[in-house]
Length: 251
Length: 256
Image 1 (cartoon, rainbow over the protein chains, first blue to last red):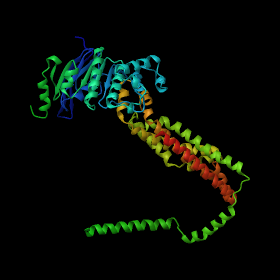
Image 2 (spheres, one colour):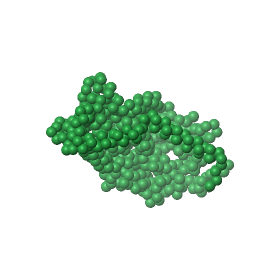
Image 3 (cartoon, chains in turn blue, purple):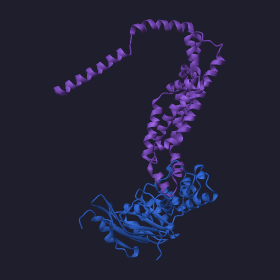
Image 4 (cartoon, rainbow over the protein chains, first blue to last red):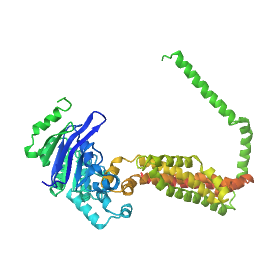
C-alpha cells in the first residue's frame, strides 16, 4: 500500500514522568479517511502536533514525500507544511473577511507577496477557491462575512480553505467537537468526500459512532500507545468504548 | 461593625498621610484665594472690553486656524506612517524576537513621554520659527503614542486565525498582511482619528513657543492686551475644535 504520510515510533515526554506518546506509528494512504480516537490525555493532540512539525519528538520520524519533518526547520519546514492542511476545532477563520477570502487564505503560500498584500489574487486562484466552496456546499455564501456564519458553516469554509491549499494531507484536530450533531454530520460527510477525491484525511474524534459511520480506518490511542489500528469493518467498537469508560484507571 | 484598635490606628494614619500630602501640595502650588479675589474682577473688566469681538483681521486669523488644522493633519499622518512598521515589532504576539521588542518599546515610551509641546520647543530652535516645527513636534509624540496603541490592538487579536494562516506555509509578511490587518484595521484607523482630534487641540498652544498656528496670534493679542481680538481667536478655536471633534467622533462611530 502506498503511503503519503508515515509516522514511525514517535516518543514524546513532557517533564520527567509524563509520557505523551510512547512509540506511536501510523501510515496513511492517499484517499484514506483515518479517525483517531481516544480519551483526553491519550496523546491525540501531541500526535497531531508531531505530524505538522509543531512538536519535536525525542525519538521517531514523520515522513512526507521522502523528507523527515522532525529534522526540518525554518524555510524547509515551512515549505514542507504547504503539503499539510490543518482544520481546527475553533475553525480559526479571519472573522472580518468573507468566506471566499478565507478560502483564498489557503493560496497564501502559492501567490506572490504583493498580490496577497493588495488582495488581488489571480483569476485561477479565485476560480479554485469558488470551486472549493462549491464542494462543501457553501458557494452561495461566498460573500458572507465569516463571523456571520454558523459554526457548522464556518467549519465547512475551513475545509474549503484546506482544499484550496491543494495539500496531500488534511489533518483535522477535533473538527466537530464544537458543533451540534447535524452540523457535525455535514462536516464529516464533507471530509469523507474530500478523502474520496484522493487526499489523505486524518481526523481526531471523540465519538466512536461518528468514526465508524464516516471513516475508513480507526486508530485508537490510549496512554500514548496505539491500542487498535484497523479498518472500520474489523474494528471492535465495544473495546474502544471501554477505553473511554476505563480512562484514568490503572491498567 | 467591629474594629480592632490596630485597624483604627491604620485608618487614622492613612487620613493623616493624605492630609499631609494635600497640605504640601497647597504650599507647592502657591494656591492663593486672595489673589483670585483680586484677579477675577480684572478678568471681568477684560471680558467687558472684549465685546464686540474684532472682525477686521478675520481672514488672517482663519488662515492661522487652518495652519493649526494642517499641522495636526500632517503631523498625525507622518506619525501613522512611521508607526506602521514599528507597531508589529512592539506587539508581543507577532514580534520577531524579544531582543527587538524591548528596545522598540523603550523607544516608543520615550517618544510618548515627551509632549509635542516640548518637541516643538526643541524644533523651533533647530529648524526655526513657524508651523513646520509644530508638525515635527506633533509627529514625534504621536508616533510613539500611535504605535503603542496599535501594538496593543494587535496583542488583542485572537491567535487562532494567525496560526491557521501560518500553517498554510505562508511567509510572515503574508500572514500579517492578510490575516492580521483586516482584524486590526478598524481600530487602527480609530486611533489615528483620535490623535488627529487630540492634536488639533494640542496644536492651538504650539504657537505660544513660536511653532505656528492660531496659538501664535493668541499670544500676540494677550501680550498687547488686545481683548476684542483675543475673544475672536478664542471663539475661532472653540468652533474649530468642536467641529473637528464631531467629525472625528462620527467617523469613529461608523468604524465600530
